[in-house]
Image (cartoon, rainbow, N blue to C red; front, top):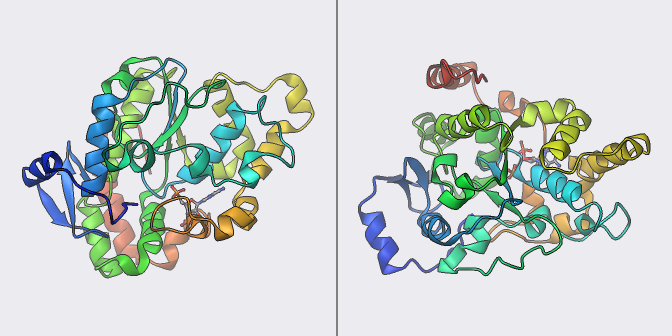
Length: 316
Ligand code: A3P
């Protein structure tokens, strides 16, 4: 999600020249920075974020690999924590704004293009909610050390790969098979998958009060149940009265794939550079990979994931 016109500073160019590189999915090269693969503009923003971000105790960070349900998680979390300020009504912000406009990314928005934002007044009146694809070990130290809450949404790598493949579409120089091989080698934006997942997984085991680990598949299967967990974790539990009056179900409905997909802002708008909002809502299903990948390809990924996740307690 890099803006083509982003200026890379000389300092960042120097950093890039010292990093391993591979042919990129979308920009000419991906670089391996702190163990994960990224585009130049992303690395520049991440460095600025790591240097300048100051975390508050009540900050909320929503973390994902690209294409694993970021938009959905942003919609749910934003609605939950702001429901006093923005009750469910025909004036709700999600009816006129894409979730990415309500919950900005550190790397594509706030610290993009070498800017250093003043976040002291951001979202005054509620917790600040941010989104990111940055792996846990590379989050700004202040975010890791403060008591802020991090929610990680993880998705089956095969579905995530297929979702990325469609998202990048004709911009990719690779065939599906070539892209899949790159992905199996770990070379995909913010990958390898396994390291990304494990970083957040380990933290969720060590600090469960600060890191909630969710999966797209579980969230799909029982959205009401996991939304209640999410609300409680974020410090905004639903009251008995809210549960009785169906607030949880109404939030699930508001943020559902079908509902968001049909909104005017998501059919016509453009919240992320180079991509139309409608591209953020493709199928929203679990297991769509079977329509694109051979059993042999799936087996290959499964073997790699088993080996990499072995002993961690995390399974896919
Ligand atoms: P598919 O391409 O498999 O349909 P991200 O938001 O991280 O970019 O992830 C995009 C994926 O999440 C896409 O998957 C998209 O359709 C799906 N998605 C978007 N909004 C959703 C929602 N409200 N509920 C469930 N899935 C959603």
